[in-house]
Length: 113
Length: 113
Image (cartoon, rainbow over all chains, first blue to last red; front, top):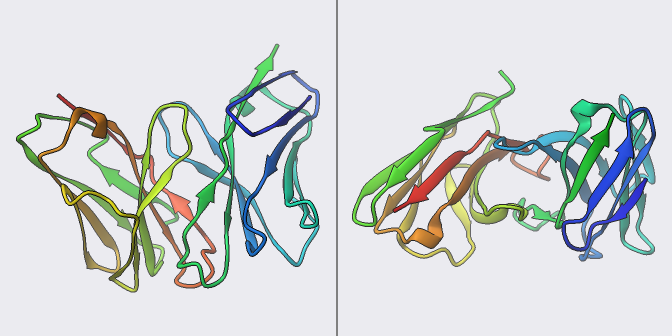
C-alpha cells in the first residue's frame, strides 16, 4: 500500500505485504531527514535517517528513499507486521538551522491480520 | 544509556498551579529540546538549548519557562496555564551539531483543568 502524508491519512496493509509511506518536505535547504514511528501514548521512536548526499539507505526491513529534485521522501517497510502499526512521521532539518526539526503531518499505518 | 527520561509521565494541574517537567539524558548530547504535541498532530518545537544556552524560543508564551541546569538536565516550568495547553510535552536531545542522534523521551501527558 502507498500513502501521501499531506493530512493524517491512514494506510491499511495486510500482514506480510510491503508498505510505502510518503512525505513531501518543504525546505530545499534541508540536508538531514529522519523517519520516526510513534505508538499511542509514547514518544517518537527513531527508525532511520538519511543525509542529502544519499538517495537511498537501508536498515532492517526498512528503506528510505530521498528525491531532492521533487523534495520527496519515502519509507518502505518490508513484510509489514502487526507491531508496525503506528503513526509515522518524517522530519527534516538543515545545517545552520539551529538543530530545529520540522515534522511532516504523519501517516497512520494499520496492519490487518 | 541511549534514553531520554521524562518525569512525570502524567500531570494534572489547575490553572493557578506551578509545576515543572523534568528531562534527563546521559548520552553526552549537547543539544536539548522541548516539543509540544496535540492529539493527531506532529510535534511542534518550543525551545532549543545548545551547549546549555537557549538558542531558539519559538515565540512560546511566558507561562512556559525552560531551564537547563547542566548538560544532562532540562526542565520546563509551568505557571498559570490554560486548558488549551493540555498536550503531550516531549523532550529530545541530539549531538551538538547537525542534529544527529536526535532522540525523544516518552513525554509528559499534561492536563490543565
